[in-house]
Image (cartoon, rainbow, N blue to C red; front, side, top):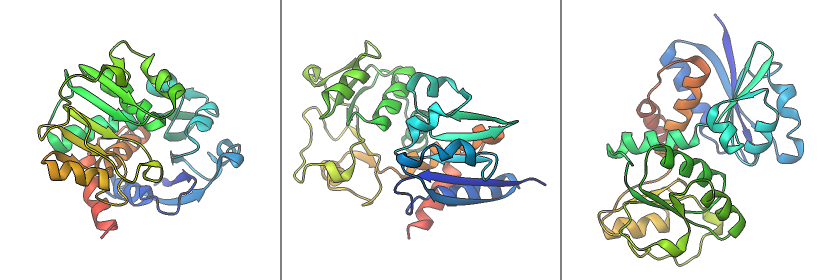
Length: 265
């Protein structure tokens, strides 16, 4: 039986929970293998291709390597091609393949945690980095009514807004918000945050970070009575998508979410 050599690369990487999820996926499918964390910063990103096949069969990719890893691939899936980033790599028959599952994993987590469809929803995204780009892309593909992107970097906001006519900037917020998603790093957030106009107790609030488990921003929405989740569900469903792409399998994200809760207790 083949023993899979798996891992997660990025920087910083020491707190990544992806190896636990990889091992759970292997067990679920009756496969053998290992998974490790490997610190690789952008300065040493040229190591990625030489590691694949020699040291690893498949990898999860995190910041700051998602864009440079995409440029190292021989072939990209449809979403990775559109976005110019990957979060998953696999070595097949001497070729490096890349995929982006962040956006689809986020949509899967909404279905799994809230049993909702985003079709016709009015959504606000806080932040305009790579995670925001992938999430917005999938929201549009799933038929969201409108997506408003709020970010500090006007160039990255403009890049996302220009991609589809249903994506707008802050000047067009005028309706109740069905879903609000915070993609900004906790280190760059304002100390004193506020509930955005248009948010009500009917709004679903998602913070894609999970340390702390309940961020001050998420706590505000909890106090308002919003249904809410941190980023653990997105992580579980995103990695499930990665492994299903590697092995043409059907590992459910709901299987992996308890693994994360156990790892953090």
